[in-house]
Length: 293
Image (cartoon, rainbow, N blue to C red; front, side, top):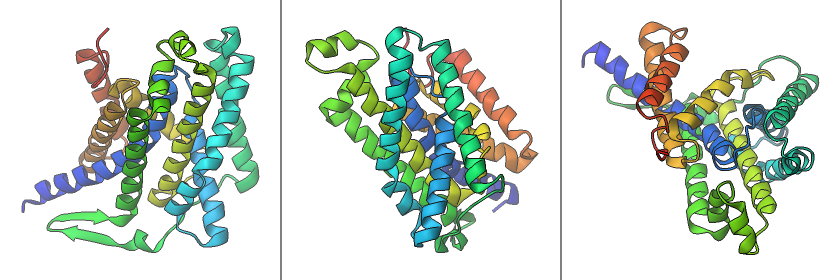
């Protein structure tokens, strides 16, 4: 096989695996930002906090980091419901969720970052489970388990979220709450409770994504700055409230970014990836899977 073709195929495969990690992060944001219309700028910081929690628990108990990521999700769900309670009490119910609400999440983001620095220091941390050093070779294509296992966990979490949103009454209520909360009240459903549950789910997904992240790469308390633009761009590219769109956009973003880094260097990859975002929005302003107004 031609070396360039082999390099391209490996770049595409690695980009798809990286896209799985992006999809886990963006799926939670698709719930809070796309469905609830809450601009949670602290979402990537919560993801990094989930990664540090996995490092702390996994190191102390000797458990697999991906298992810890799943086990800690209920704790982060409760954390998310608590954050939403504060947001709703001080901002949303008074109609101040626009600028003041955004400032609130900026504050949450910086509190998380400073708290992580105080607890763990500014150094990078990571975990190396046994499979992190294993690479499957399929012909000319290398598939590192360090990236494959987190991507599979991400797809499983997204699949569970999709089933919940499409097959349960609560999931359907989450999809409807931002569009017509009054209709939910007529059905004896409290829209605030539904939004609180949905926001908790989005934070739980961020924690799972953080657990996957520490297997793929080292993290430090400021790592969330790298992901802010990416996860919001993926969410917008996919069509805001579209879960399938967020997944497809994450894969596209990961492939474009990784192939560009492979052939032209990592410094070009963000520019080209965000250029794809602008191209998609120029052709389809509503995103890949968004509905036209």
